Length: 162
Image 1 (tube, one colour):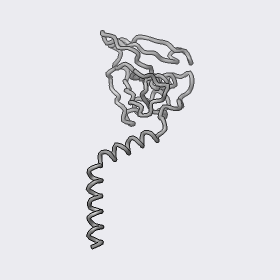
Image 2 (image 1 turned 90 degrees about the horizontal axis):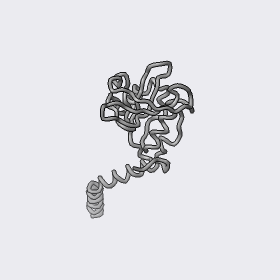
Image 3 (image 1 turned 180 degrees about the vertical axis):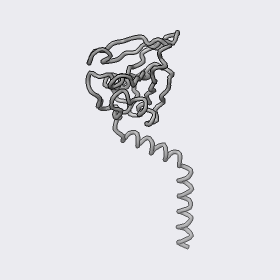
Image 4 (image 1 turned 90 degrees about the vertical axis):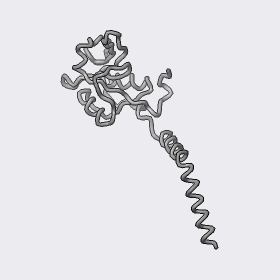
């Protein structure tokens, strides 16, 4: 008799667990996000460089990129390997990447004009620590890859809220 009662209790428990599976998974995902460190907490790129500037711009948007992409010339390839959307479609807040030069270059897309031209801000285009802006003509965009940051699940209090 005890075995039968134990069997039904276990069966009932499994049935109730199955019914609450979505809630359990949601609770697990929420807990996992709460316990994970902010991937944008520390900027590991070299100060004064384009990579450092772009990292901080993405962080202010409440989005994320990886801290391990090294020089800008590797960013598109490594971003794609890390599951980021990399294409030739500019969007405000995305990153314009070029592998040209010794270390490559990245810039932050500030605005897309109706004619398709793109306004970018960047650091170290002319010299370290210098922040500049320029317009990239839409006919020249094919020379660049566009990296689309992911949403940061751990937005810091410093992130801007829209």
